[in-house]
Every structure is written in C-alpha cells, then in structure tokens.
Length: 160
Image (cartoon, rainbow, N blue to C red; front, side, top):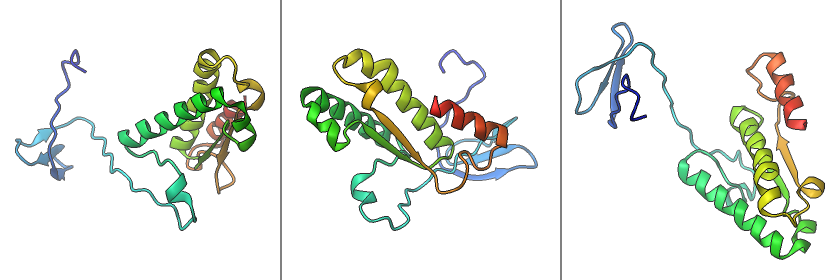
C-alpha cells in the first residue's frame, strides 16, 4: 500500500466512533476522519461441542492459523508423494466446515491449490482421480445471507 497516497495507517486501540461527524477515536492519535468506515470485529473459534474438533481441526481466523494450515497441507502432500498408501487413509480428502463466505472461498482456494499447484509440483499424485474437497454446511444453502442467484453460482462453481 506504499503507493496509495490516500491511505493512512495507524495501529492503535479504537476507543470510540463518532458516526454523526464521521470520526474514529483511538489512543495516541487525534480523531481520524473517514468517508467510509469498515469495521472488522474479529472472531473466536467455536467448535459447538463437537468432540475431537479442537484437537483435529484447523481453524482459519488468524494469519498464524493460515500458515499452520498451509504447512499441514504441504506436509501431507509431501507425505503422500513418498507413501501413496496414505491416499487410502484419506490423505487427499480435505474437509471444510462452514458454507459461508470463508468456507466457500477456502474450498475454491483449495481446489485451485490442488489443480494449479499440486498437480504440477507433485506429478505422481492422482489429484484428478483421488483428491476430494468436501464442504459441509448445516443449513440448506451455501452463502446463506446472500441472494439465491449467488448461492446457486457458488454451488455450481465449486462442483465444477
């Protein structure tokens, strides 16, 4: 973002927002005016009491989570490349829980990783024949809050 001359970056604790005057108050800086304000509230992991999930799942809420997941995926691909018998144990099956924006994007990114990267980097792996990406969603539709047209598009795109 260095070449973005209309960008100002501060790392500070937000103490308040004056919506009427379009200003953000933060510790250590003068009130910051804005035209548009995007608030990212963050999230915490909730496994909803699912036994074994905390020990075996890879949440994706932080950069650290993303790096841990990436490392796991590539270590798994390396292991399968050395020992193809791991495929029968499900080593090329990737399960993603949650059909909201993050889950749908993760499933798409996983498909891209497998087909655009892993097929080239690991030519001996049967990616096309044996790799699976399973997306689990408890509600009847992916991207629940979105319009049906976008829900259908996401479902069709992921199937392809």
